[in-house]
Image (cartoon, rainbow, N blue to C red):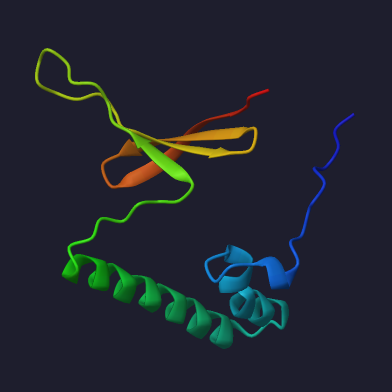
Length: 114
């Protein structure tokens, strides 16, 4: 018999400024209230903040380092080409793998390691 996974909510006081639940709270509230204009405005604010953060990193000559993802570069082949790159997400016992295709990441595998 299939069962839904148990959902665990983190207390708002325990959320960091970068947690999705906190970042997207205004967007979610607007969607719940069926206010498409407010949801779009809040989403645009988040996206603009991401763009500004990226520009600031570029100006400081910093490289973005994801906290939960590790990039696994493909190995060089004899013909000078490189195999596909992967991003691996590890959190507790969950492992997800995304394959890089050009500028797009596609989830290719997911497994629970015990």
